[in-house]
Length: 286
Image 1 (cartoon, helix red, strand yellow):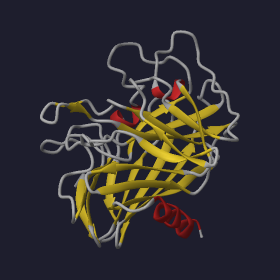
Image 2 (cartoon, helix red, strand yellow; image 1 turned 120 degrees about the vertical axis):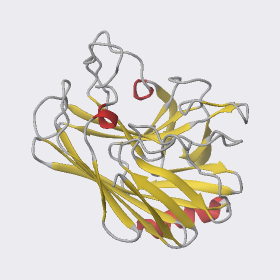
Image 3 (cartoon, helix red, strand yellow; image 1 turned 45 degrees about the vertical axis):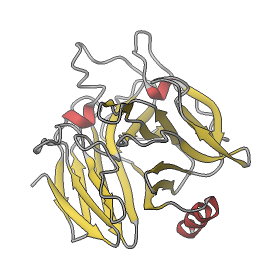
Image 4 (cartoon, one colour; image 1 turned 30 degrees about the vertical axis):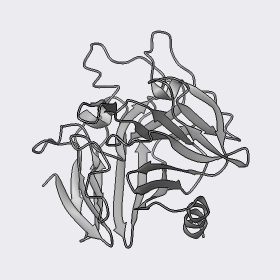
């Protein structure tokens, strides 16, 4: 089985690997569907996914043709799904063909409205051209009225809705001084384009119908927020685009055979005040 349905509290999630099934397209892994009892419409674009492991990158040009199988290596490399319990699942990707990165992603639903997410990886060879492991996740949001993400920066609430794809798309922490290197001839990408905005605390949220989707991380080191107004394509019925509320995890000066990772929590609940958003983050951080 490549996927299964999980329920806890107000949430129902379909979690699966990168196989195709019905209308779900091959290549998209993670949370195929996330619904709340107050909003039965899938938060994520139904044919694709959210918290989808999208890219492994090192700033070097590797694709020899237009297939972009290396650019989207997590989509194309073999991946397996395992149901661990009624509320928990794990995706495992053995060392990939190009970057030789092995990874484990675990999801667990927790009442009333939480989806805990953890990621572990091991580089099995020295192949990252510029010495930094770059990893990227995409969440394709299903035609929200407000395509923005919101976060804290410079002591204030900040709003980011980029004007177009690959335009000032990545937000760094205020202390992030890492300068990624890119080889000549490498194509454009969301992770190459930096926003002048900086974030203070490792969380952001977006609005979807009557609900709020909040994504919180256990660290700032290596975490960058990323936004696209149209990464999920066009929703013809709603006459709008599907934004991508994304993030990156960067590991500079990595060591082979050493495990790296992070933990995150997604909160999908009915809309609340910003004070309550801060309480959600403070409570989880404790």
